Image (spheres, helix red, strand yellow):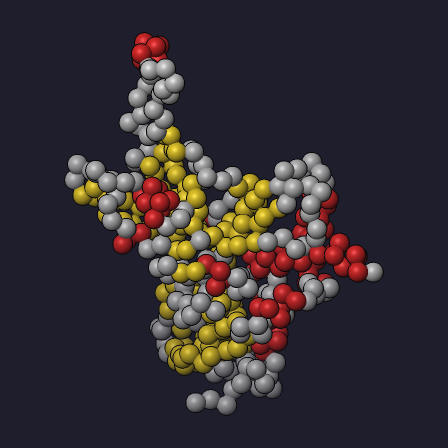
Length: 356
């Protein structure tokens, strides 16, 4: 038990303002998770926090003003690294103070060894509260911190107003930058409204511009051990449970396409397809076409962002050829945005203009 209340002290409001880029209006809550006491030589190896629920997005660490040296908090994401020296931050004894660190769950972090004294912290799990509808009903807050969102929305709006941009309409794909938990047969739309950072900005701007968007997962593997193949799915399949892969059975991309309603994003040509020479073509019966074992893409997605490494998760599965073996497939989350043909696009600002 503790009398420390981050909500009453206004910490959650500060976190919501400073940490989020597209979710400033989301209500959040902090759940007390554990008390940590680090003595001399205590440390915590680099790790990422395990999400406790689909709406958990991060962690909050409160460092109390106990005398100690060392025990710095190091955070890493991609090629960037930040060091927080809580011992120095709370060293002023003239008035009570605590240090706090709030971060997303997919950020790697560690505690360096404590040299002396005791480092005492409280850790909270941070959750979004279920208020997605209320969040989407408003407009993007017009604040200095929303310069990125407003610049993106302005550029996107100019593209939509350009009749040469996707004149027949189409699908735009944004690979998400942050990591999100994937569970077997998970409905990916449960992530909608719970995206983080720049991912949340993209979703928010699309809602503001009245562009339908949905979250998908892409499974990437190699067909017949050679061709890179991508399948887009609306659910997160557990490929460890997939049966009949390889050998006399089907390839993984075929199973995901046929049994899981996956959409093929690349052309796949079977290595067993016959090469027809001129004599073969002459011997075909009238009206008969050469056998085509090529699988053609089910849809075309115009990718705006590349797949970042933190988003790309490896999964293993058993497949069969001449002998059983373990193969790998990769998964990453993306946001797919529907763009109507030129002349039929109606964005949110235009709808508001029509009411005047």
